[in-house]
Image 1 (tube, rainbow, N blue to C red):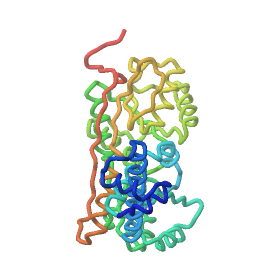
Image 2: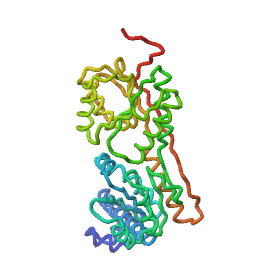
Image 3: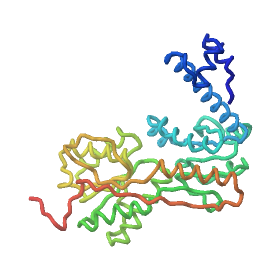
Image 4: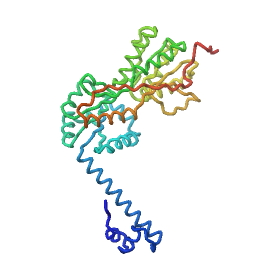
Length: 347
């Protein structure tokens, strides 16, 4: 953008001669005036750059990051981090010349077809659909939109849709193997009371891995506790007070399960790991547990979603882009919440 001397002079209340001296790096102008002129020019150049990028994005079209809301579990837990969550994704999309929008579809408030019809009027070019709470049949509505779709946290690969997923099976395998190799076979899986894709996969994987490790049929070792911290805590307290035979270890399905269960164990004076060992899935916020560090298996999220958006952009710009199903492996963070029965005996 070429900024004229007379426009700068008029805006700042200076003479054109003074502005000309600054632009041509001539002496005879005070440092304050020189800085004032240069700051104004930089500001105008940045404004013009942003306007050009907006115009370019509007011309190229809109990429929609859509959170599908059924139970509200995923959205409500992530809402406090939403600005950080979307900022990086907006940058990825804008750098490729597209406009970016983050939206939430709540199936309890609006018909899906009506919502999608409205979005089709907005020069929509692609959708990254965060579909953890979706049922299988709902994907057919998105097919009819006629733009490339990539799905996160659900699997519609068999219907020709790209999927970017946490490898829940591999993560649960880590949990079970970690406990079994430390002498635990009486293991119970503590679950939430809602059925979303990642949770269902983890439960299926638990049953499979328990059988593979010769720990018996684990179908009846999955205990549903609740969907809020209060429900989980109260149900866990009831579980502990029933007097049933206690396992030696728990696998904790989610961070909410981990927090509620650990609080209940602490209040019932059950020592971790001396009385019960714990392995959690997903990172847990700080909990006052007297130096306890929960051993966890954690999936990647931000990097996975960023990669999915980049693949979506590639798919938009090249119709021949391959349909992919990408699994991201988990990582284990070893804390001090598991008693190794093969090495130590507590007295």
